[in-house]
Structures are given as C-alpha cells and as structure tokens.
Length: 141
Image (tube, rainbow, N blue to C red):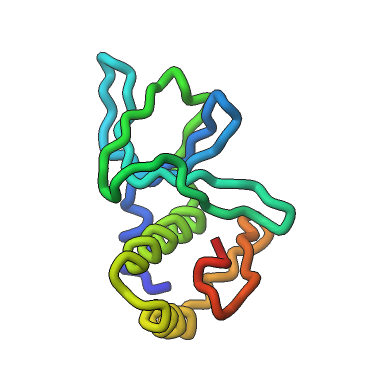
C-alpha cells in the first residue's frame, strides 16, 4: 500500500460500533447532533464473527449513499476502526458499488490487478477475513 493511499484511508472517519443488541457495525461517520444524540453515518455494514473469520453483511436496507441516523443511546461502544478494518470496509463498499454496473469478469480483472500489487490483503490473525474461493471476489467478505 502506498503512503498516499494509507494517509487517505487513515483520514476517513470510519468507526466501529458495538450496539445494544450485541451486533457490531462499521460505517463512515459524517456528523454528530449533540442536541438530539444522533450519529449520522454512511454505508453501515454489519461485522459478523464466523468460525473461519469475520465477514461483512448489509446492516440496513437503504440506498447507497443514504444517510443513516443512529441513536447514541443504542451504542454501547464506538471507536475509530483500525487501519486494516477501514481498508477492508472500503474495499467491500467499492466492490458493492462496482457490482451495480460492471460484469463479473470486469470486477475480477480489477481485483486481480489490485491484488497482484497489494500484499496487505492478508490481514493477519486479528482480522482473519475469509478467503474461500479465489474465483469469487465476494467470498473474502
């Protein structure tokens, strides 16, 4: 990963939230309303702990880019997501957006080009995301 890309990812306000229902979500925080205790987020994804690692799932049925209002009293804990998690979250959202208008082959060509230059797709034991099927770019999430 280049220093420019790392700095850009680090500058993003991507947070992980542990909610009162026990779920964990990752989202880009764009604003906070102190008067009404509301956190405004974009593209929330649920982080699911599975036997072979973690995976992302859609957390809410919304249009891409639609602002979600998250009540502060529904949050147990929140923190800025670690760099590796922010990177994977951004990759997942990028794939989701590409899936809307590119074919599977076009997406696979892009992924192959990126993966050949980026050894950081292996995130270590702390965030051991799945990597089951090399022919399916979605299998790693």
